[in-house]
Image (cartoon, rainbow over all chains, first blue to last red; front, side, top):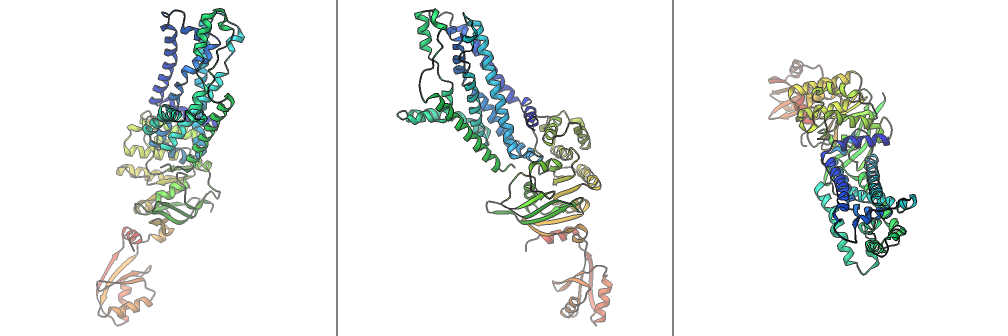
Length: 274
Length: 297
């Protein structure tokens, strides 16, 4: 059954131009951006961006840089879900024998597949850049910090689940896209500012998700470089300590994601698919 | 006969509009069951509920004697209102999705596309089809996998006369093969030609149901007038010649019982010493019967 559901999504998506284009942009953003970074800083003395592409720092840095790309994946989910409403194809699938739960399952499985895809892409890119730019290569150093990939997966999954909920709630493509982007770029940051004096600001849904892949301590790495060239690879890059404790932050993201899926489930059960 | 679909007190409202009220239907295996009613009588709502698109407010229904679940719909071929498919996918890929949902392989696709005379267009995008072709693709999708039950909601909608005849032929063929058919239509002649059992809906209520032959017979109507209509009316009402007597514009309008002819009425009047000076026989068309059934009270 699960394979059949995925196959249905595959037929729908691979022939859908907006999906191909968005995925193309995603690829481009990934590869081009990452190829450009190392190239642009040849001129600046002492500080070199290529320092950031060495093991084990490359894992943290790239995860942080590419985190916004997950928004594109969420936009894909919003587009294809709202399209099912516009084309009345949720109805068609119901009539021919899918259950409402299976309709949701279909989209959730797609989210898992896209999250895996994004994580693998990040892993492959980081590995490649790391191999190119590292001076010293040992197995331990290379694989240190790879745990961040797990968080990247959770982050992708969380963004897309929230996108799915917005799409099921609003049904209209343009409005859903706007709402989702506004939540990320406007509502959440403004609330964060309003609540800046209170600890609760760290509990905002989008904030916890961005905190999954936090800003690496860039200054530290350059300082280390200036003080002694040898010590660079000896200690891993730190993350600027900020916000909730790690475990609590991850727990909050998982909680929000579960809530989004649960709400999506309820919406799916109650919607009138005409 | 095995039960295919039954509804128990099904009701559904859209805000203040009562779409269907306390609907009880029983459909058995092999029946060609017509649901007849004017626009807005609740036909589509009923079929949308039993195919899982919308939820009823109250009441329940059973497919094959079991409580409803999605898997049952895989053995039912449905066409509800306008068929909706992925506009950017070609016909073949659209039908592949249906095959995947039903859990069957793709071999049947060519058969149903040929049946719907769309085989040459199988590589065209759905969005490029005309309305009639879309309707035919909907029929093709319903026939995928040779289901034993067909649920069709106005299947000839938007078709040209040739298309209507073709769809009717296909549906009749299915009925002949012993498939169960549930057909919603506002076209009386369609139900009459295809179905052997009919339920008539009006404003969401079941007005009448029964075999087509009983419900939609062509009654003979006789208009007559004599010197003393009141007495004749009384006599006729006490006889077993007529089903119904009405007075319209000073003449009596009789609905004759089966096998009674106007001359028998004349003879009857003559026996009662009443001389008829106006007698007009007219067959009541099904259309007017249907209109009468559903007209405003």
